[in-house]
Image (cartoon, rainbow, N blue to C red; front, side, top):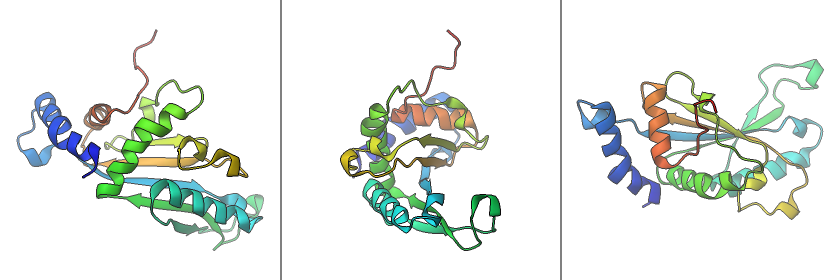
Amino acid sequence: MARLKDVYKSKVASELQQKFAYGSPMAIPKLEKIVVSMGVGKAVADKKFMDNAIKDITVITGQKPLICQAKKSVSNFKVREGDKTGLKVTLRKERMFEFLDRLINLAIPRVKDFRGLNPKGFDGRGNYSMGLDEQSAFPEIDPARIETQQGMNITFVTTANTDDEAHEMLMLFGMPFKSTKQE
């Protein structure tokens, strides 16, 4: 079993129950899924870029990505309808907790000039989105092998009803948010 799944069952759920006084154990927020996405608009000009991005996201998440296509043609970006412009992976259950563990304990501490995650990344419904500027923050990626740096977006989808509940749950998992008070 994934380490953070044990942490959720033993520590996080009980602390959330105490803080928010839920009427039922089923009302306690859970992490539903994590969606990792990567825009690869450069792949329109260079097909090798798409292959490298697919390899990187597969190594990082342990799952093959879904290739997303452009829905509309945009002449300013030289994108035609149907061009492959993005990759996404949806992680659930064990893989989700293992990815979250690696993200919190290995990848985020390796980010250059890191001062904490922005607490304004919540959407109002208890989901949190963040971005990484480069895939080399993950230890699975060999920085010497990278031809171009590629960023990625990571979205945490929860069953929480409010941002405060989701924020508290992610904090209990160990997400390093910036302090909200002004210094």
